[in-house]
Amino acid sequence: MFTGIIEEIGCLMESRQGSLRIRAKKVLEDVHLGDSIAVNGVCLTVTGFDAASFSVDVMAETLRRSNLGGLSTGSRVNLERAMAADGRFGGHIVSGHIDDTGTITRLEQEGNAVWVTVSCRKELLRYIAEKGSITIDGISLTVASLWEHGFQVSIIPHTGSETTLLEKKTGDLVNLETDLIAKYIERLMRPAAAEPAKSSIDLEFLQKNGF
Image (cartoon, rainbow, N blue to C red; front, side):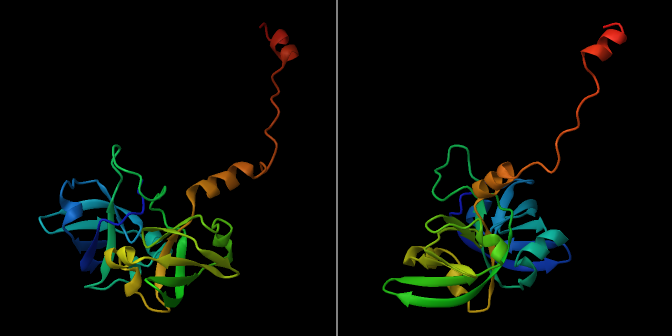
């Protein structure tokens, strides 16, 4: 589990079929094989590391659901280690399982902040609430407003300098993870597809069979 508080910006050193190697520093301080590190919000497993980088495997489903397939050597990525049990919960509950990508449609300065408008599939909007939480490229953000085809967030200077979001341009893809709790609530509220099958074992059956 993650919190959406980015620890550092890494750099893609190498991309091979099914694997990435990323230059980093802070997330390597206590790294072990098998650890989870979120790369642009995607939970990936460390398969190798040295003093300056770590490697992860990336499967086809991950590439379909995220923007990792569009990375090239030199691309900067947001990094976060899995949350420690005694750590502060600075953002919100982030699983690192991307729902889909969205497209940046507008960036607009207002005072010391930047408004970022993101369009996404209508199916995702049911899990997004005004003043609720959304994860964009691994960053925990507050939804400022909703519209028919997307939503807006406002980026303060600290978030802009500590993440890659304001390096994006109109038309760029970003990874989106919607609210985990909303998805579970919907699943629990959904009526069962069919009534459970009625058992043929009753008192009469047990008596006939010597019980």
